[in-house]
Image (cartoon, rainbow, N blue to C red; front, side, top):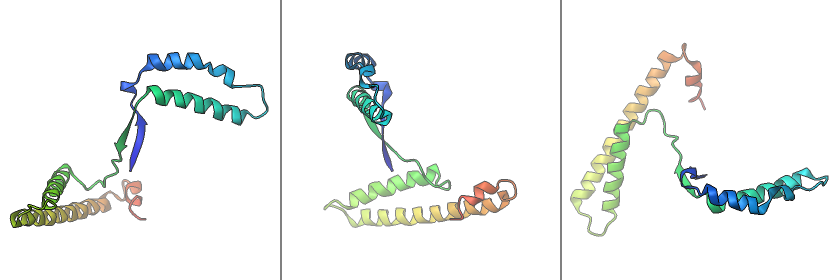
Length: 137
């Protein structure tokens, strides 16, 4: 899952400050009976100014299963590189074999790591029941 967040390190806060002063946000809130409408209008104007002066960036979700280790991630990247090379029209049989071997190796590593992880759950069941409950659904 990719999310867009504000990158405050690269933001132009001086420019944002000047823009907010020129807008005069206090004038947006009127003495009306619909405070929700005033709030929505104030927020829209404020967020519009923020989006003009603070850049955004996309971040990737890091919700990987706990049994995926750094070694498995490394082999997965190698497999993905091999797959991309295999898609080229000049792909050789040797590249096809390398991809198949990496794919097989990754599957075995993930399966073993997953079995080890779930095997360790039963020893922790009495001590940490919440850890076990995460995987019931």
